[in-house]
Length: 377
Figure 1 (tube, rainbow, N blue to C red):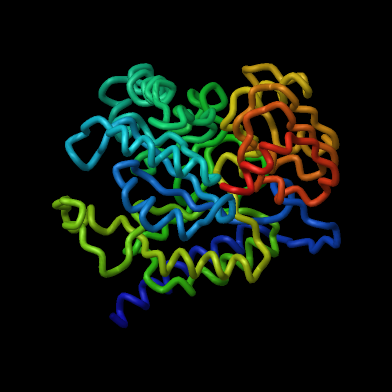
Figure 2: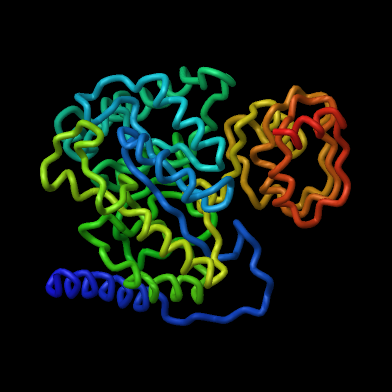
C-alpha cells in the first residue's frame, strides 16, 4: 500500500510540476470573475454509456440539479455487453441526466480506436461509422414519457485517448467545437476553447488518494484556467462488477472512480470558489433542450442554424420575450446571467428553478396557473 501511495503521489506531483512550467507568469487580477467567461472551474467527463446504471445510481444525487455539472460521453451501443443496442430504459436514463443539467456528448458509435480504425479503413469510413452514425442514432432517440430529445452535440471524447491532428482537423469545427484527449502540455484549458483539449484521468488506478489533486486545483485557480477530470464508472470501492452481471478483466475493472474521491474534489473546488462546467461550456457554447427556445435565441441574436450559440453572446441580453413560443423547458436560460426582464407567458413551462441562477433578474411575466403548477411539482 505504501508503494502504491508513493507512485500515486509521484504521478500527480509530476503533473503539477508540468502545469507550473507551462505558465511563466501568473498575473493576479482585481476584476470580478464571470462564470463561463473568466471564472476558473473544473469539468467531470465520464466515458462509455454502458455505465449508465452506475452513473445514475451514484451520480444524480452526487451532482444535484444544475449544480455540479458533468459531461457523459456516450456510444450508440452497449460496449460491455456485446455491443448490443441500448434499451429504451437506458436512453431514458441518459436523458434524465441531461434534464439535471449535464451534457451528453459523443464517444464514438461503437467505441472504436480511431487511430487503428483509420489505419485499416481510412478517415472517411471512420467518420461515417463512428461520427455520422452516432449523430443519426441520437437524432432518433427520445424519452419514452416526455418525448424530450438530446441537445445539439458540441463535444467529442476520443475512445482510448487515441487520435491524430489530422482527425482533429476533419471533425473540428465541422462536427464539434471541442474534442477531449488526455495529457497535453500543461493540461490547463482556456475559456472558449476550440479543438482538442487535455484531461486528467482520475480512475482508481491513477488516483487513490484524492488530496493529490489539491495543488493542481489551487494552481488552476490562480492561473484562471480550467481542468477536465476524466473517469468512467462511478462506483464505491466496495461495489463489485458482478452486481451488473459483468465479467471484466483486471485491466478493464480499473476504469472506475469512487463517489468518495469525486466528492472530495467537489468539496476542494468549492473551497476555492471554482465553478463546475461541462466540456461544451468550457468550449464557450450554450445549448438548449427545447428547440423552440433555441430558435427564439437564434432569431433574437441573428445566429444561423449552422453556427454555435456562444455563451458570451448571451451576456449582453437584458430583456427576453419568449411569450407564446410553445416552450416546455427553460434549459439554457442559466447562461443569460445579465438578464433583468423575462416574459415566459403562454408557454408550457412547469419548472422555474433555473431562474434562481440569474442574479440580476427582477421582472418575470408568467402565467399564474403555470407558476402554481411549478410550485406543486
